[in-house]
Length: 330
Image 1 (tube, rainbow, N blue to C red):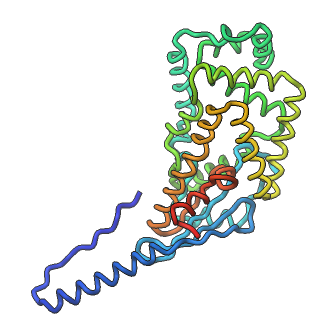
Image 2 (image 1 turned 120 degrees about the horizontal axis):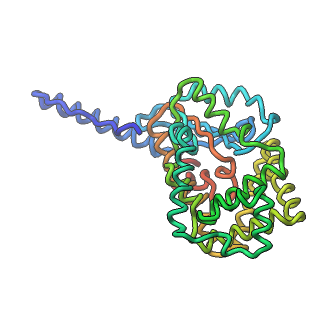
Image 3 (image 1 turned 45 degrees about the horizontal axis):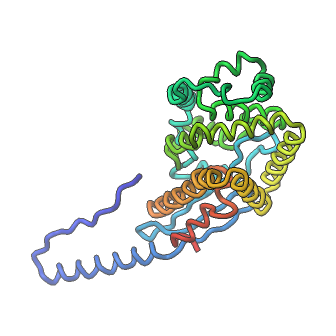
């Protein structure tokens, strides 16, 4: 982050010159404060899930933030990306993603460390000891073999739940992480040797993955096992994923907002206070923090390009809602 600008006072022998300089300083300071106080404007641009915030920096100069809402899985249909988006990316003074480029490149290390720590935190507990024979059989089948389940049996339940989630996505859709929009921007940044700062610290993402007590994680795992083993549930998941992807592909902001809000409400209905806490952690808290980051980007000036999950920019308590609440945008 850039540091605040300090005004250096000079000693003047002439009282008149000192008074005149003080007057100019005061009027300039007032002008800067007035410029900063003016709310920035938000506009939805033509490309899918692409927005532009136009404002002024702390010195009264034009300042812009471009936002590309992304999807974390995808297909070839998403490409090529719009020229307007790529131009904004290439010409940006700074680039921000959900995680910094350094954190993304170290993700494999973080994942390995996280799983190792999970075994220690489990304290010798076995997930299988908390499952019915039918659930164990389903886990063995879904993961391909009893050996595959045995490898993660001693970890906290979130590890098994995450493994099932990845398996479900693979089996219910042809969408892959390879074609995620986030991956493409990370590749562009690598190719151009550009720095990417993170809207999140890596610990934020770790807290999301490992959220909940052992018992709460176990509840989610049991629900996931049921959904993955039931053909009707698998079909519902497939339909929901397709609807989400189709809305993104079509650039349908209202549809995606509706799906996202409905999904959050469903989780709260199923898991109660735990679901509400999880939603606040995944969306509300991060969206509020990102809004503060955007305010700082605008104040620092120049052009900023942000790429992050589309669901954060639409629906209830979106980043834009928090920007309005804090008085940054109209």
